Image (cartoon, rainbow, N blue to C red; front, side, top):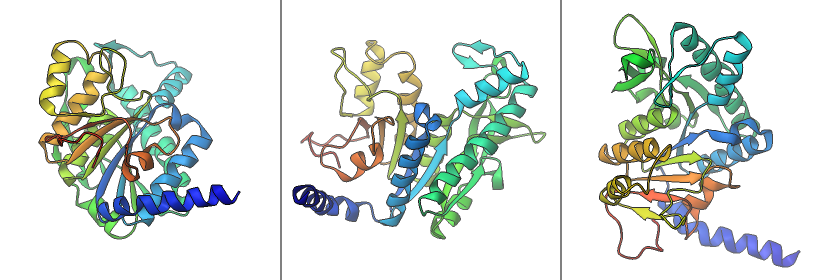
Length: 292
């Protein structure tokens, strides 16, 4: 038992440089995947977010909710159609999307954070015209691409000690349309507008892998493009790295794609020497083990 407490104290001591490093840093966390449907995983995620706020960081949570949307559409008898892997979102579907994302999912995350002693407020991209979109692809219907970001409401919240939890539903450029926005895309746009220090994309995979199946710990934008071109990065990982590249281009210091199923994944990335997942940033240090 004594050795366990000693190890805990040593871990806290070793984390000090990183705690200092991230004081006042804005960290956008995209939360989604299997962890959203598990109460224990949700509580653990919420505890990590509260800890980040407690030690002086400014976490901003952006979430998805695809499985919950699918369940509700099925219950309502609304058929889902897909074009190139993306859901066609008609008027009936976007109403369900807004109900699930801004209501059920958003408030569940808010409650989980509050239950862990944090102060969270749930909003969507429609609040204060945070995220204004145009149609991403006419074939997809009400699927939006952010074209205008107004992030002062987020700054106001975290400056007041509140953790923003944001549903990726947005306002259209005309006629007060409602758009569904891919969660990763929304998180990247918000991180870029905030000039965030970090964007953490929590997924159901360990990170970007090379042809041998090993996780690539660090990449530059040029290296990412080369891996896409030679087929190493393919399928569902392509939209994630494209989000990362755009965020870095817009001023985010680094983007990390990491496995949200791993306990305390955010803390491992931010507060340990080895980090977690795959980091993408504009410049890659000469010494790879040092992740910061």
